[in-house]
Image (tube, rainbow, N blue to C red; front, side):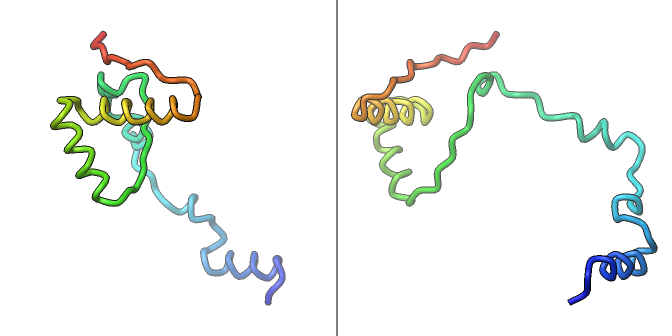
Length: 101
């Protein structure tokens, strides 16, 4: 195996002594384009995303609960999590209503 100085020399020979970052030409205004982000949705303001990969049967059961309760997915998951929190005696999160300020 080559020592670090040999690796450095060979990488300079391969890439013309320039780092990859130096060799890439970035078009003018690219930073401004990268800085633009999609505006945050009103319904997501002040919220966080929690993701879980579950067996498809969980989705089917959630949909069945939704048809019985008339709740949307957020309300159904909030209800389920709060039930879990009560079982383990941890603070329950109040139901949060999204307002369009």
